[in-house]
Image 1 (cartoon, helix red, strand yellow):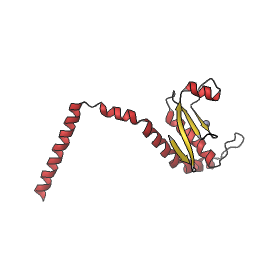
Image 2 (tube, rainbow, N blue to C red):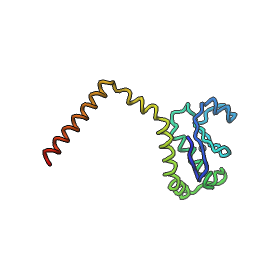
Image 3 (tube, rainbow, N blue to C red):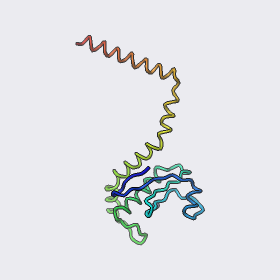
Image 4 (cartoon, rainbow, N blue to C red):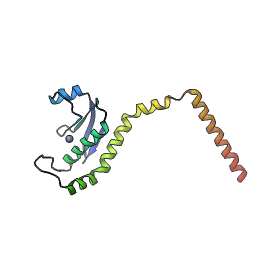
Length: 142
Ligand SMILES: [Zn+2]
């Protein structure tokens, strides 16, 4: 999924752990990576906690785009952390929500197809009956 941060286009892509190792010349487990040069966020799709990882990587992206230092030799004060969180929260939350809405769409539709045709018919009949009852009530009160 593509998104914009500080008017720059970024992309979130899920890749396997093997692809992650190939790409970064490592041989272990990396949950996520933010690539500032190519404006890419890679999420390891072999992990369970993708949402937390995406929040984490989007914070790197936010800090990069809005000029906050990410050098190990400089540290953030408590108040810096609170301010960064306050400024980034809505933006990052919206991107994560949008991302998982897209990703989970398939699962969502599967949930609906679990209903048998008979169940769907029954639900529709119930809705029609309720609608007719409402109309009758409205006529009486008019
Ligand atoms: Zn990190």
